Image (cartoon, one colour):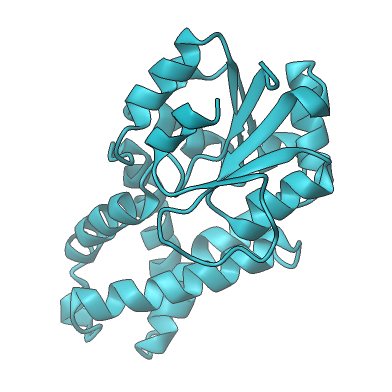
Length: 231
């Protein structure tokens, strides 16, 4: 086998972040009775949140804001769009969201099957994720994914974020493996594919949403089942 060590991304690659986030935010919307605060429909709230979350995650990955700022400011900015300047409410919403989100269990089709397949083929499976340490481990446990991975590298434990090469170097060192025998598997053209390139690693772009990838990956797939034709 050319590769011995497979490094997966978690959110949007294996764990269906959008589906789980929507379920969690639906519960949050009801728990805080946001409709009564003139926030409007859930769909309005959800779409505005997604926009701010995407912007702030990008700022976090570029090192402009801290983890703690990301956690509550996405709620704060969402509330501001509805003319609600309530920092305490934003922080309470953030805490509630991060408490229930990792308990959700929805994964992409064929996730368990492909992990079983790769495990049976004696690959060493690991994770490299920009997610929060506690949150990501809870997600893995809740969805029954922990048992498949030898090493779980988060941005918090590595003190770096994808696409910086340092987080990949940290992961390779942790797994005691060589770059040429390792491959990164993820959905994000910048964080996963460019990140792997920065570290000199091959990559597989998991294109669930049929988007363009400016950085050329080693392979591209549109369904996790297609990994069987590569690995």
